[in-house]
Length: 348
Image 1 (cartoon, rainbow, N blue to C red):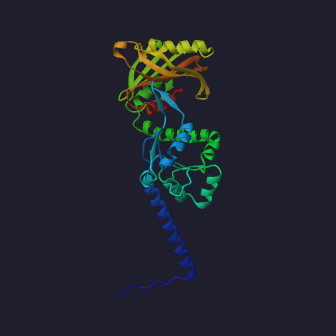
Image 2 (tube, helix red, strand yellow):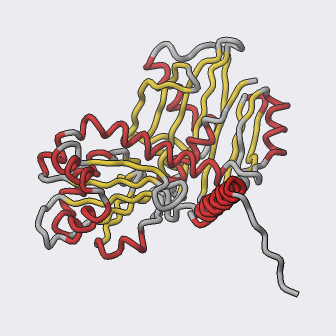
Image 3 (cartoon, helix red, strand yellow):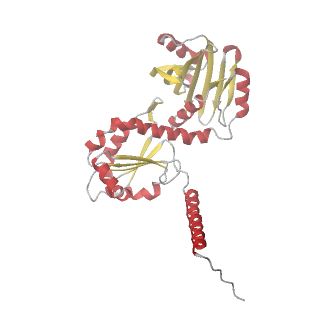
């Protein structure tokens, strides 16, 4: 007995065909979303794909944009530029931060050929003659920034740098915060310690896994948190009244604070900087520089940063400090993580 045939009228057949096409397109979308994985690579690395003939110009251009430097005391950039040849594009295109660049118009320039292949003709022409930079998100992977530079000359490339650099810096900074937030503020936070501090002191702080309380002295209004591997400290202190009015008194207070509370360390004159900033929507002082141990027999040191701001509701001045000791290794990414932690501080 054969399978009975089903006869459909034209309207029913059209409806059936439209539903089939809709399901097919939906299946493609779902599969596409599943196959686009999260971008790979360190959040403080920018993979730059260009030929050797363009490397010096592109390095100069990007170095003028990503100028943030941490003194540890040696200068350490917030972003490391990792250069690779155009032939590595397929292996590197899914990294978290990718720059594909070409300036030299020589037809034998493999970087030039790669950019020409990636851009539609109209976009290739517009970037070659106008603003040479394009910045996109999630091109080959989720949580990715992807930049293409297609400049006809060095002069054209440098022409719009002042106009574009702050916007580019913001995009990369926001990406760092987004990717790192999911890593350090995941479900494994030390919520027990968070709840304890909230009940004891009336303020909150998001505390990642691995951080713990080293010491707290209620009589001196001081809480000391720490983490090892690498060695990191966060100190939170508060005093009655507003200490922010005079820069000289602010500097003196911050200078003496580590010796009074940590006891074992002090601030070094090298690269010490005090400037005005914004913290949580209010005026604050920011100090940054180098700390060192008081006892020279056990010499240690590294970078630190502090925020000093006033809470008018409770008439208290808060000091939020963080520092690291990680000799011979990258410190900037950990300092940026601690800055993210400190900025979750909220007074209830």
